[in-house]
Length: 205
Image (cartoon, rainbow, N blue to C red; front, side, top):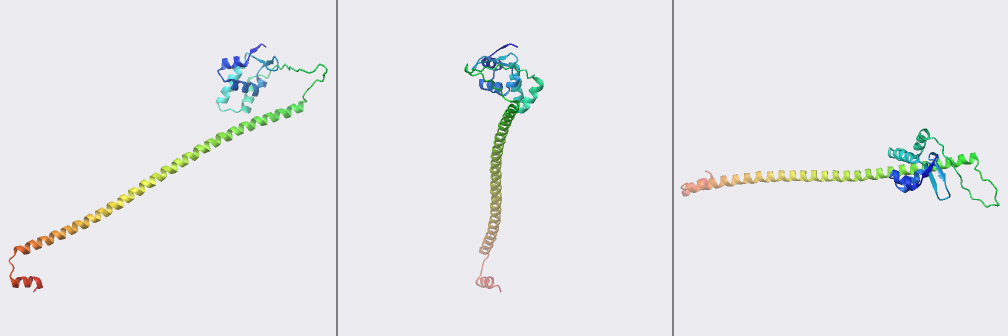
């Protein structure tokens, strides 16, 4: 297998940010063929671009890291070639090896840590949704309060209109009474009144 791609090469070919590419390479190292040149430089295989792009697509579809790892198990064979670069003093000939059971525990801890990160992200997303819902509730309450104020103003206006109508009818009745009295006075002035006639009209006999 040929290892010729650097991180910068992968960034340039995928268009992803350097931090995103490095995170994918770190979190999915089991599925990405790599060849450490030294402690600071690692070269990757040509298929790394396709794998990184696939990982990004799975994240974009709403998948989480454990789900993506399960999918990649079926899509990408785990044939990573590991070349350990170990620099030990010449006087030290001890070979350091990790026991399989210890490695399993480490893998479990890493998986739990990744799951915890995903759960924390879900909690953050839920808190964002709850905040948005609270804001919507506040806005709805404000709208309801505005509607109640409008209804109160309309009811008050209707009451005032009823009072105005009653006063108008009362004034009209008073005007009619005044007009009737005016007509009576005018008619009385037009009739010749004698002393005895005035007495009869006054005392009604």
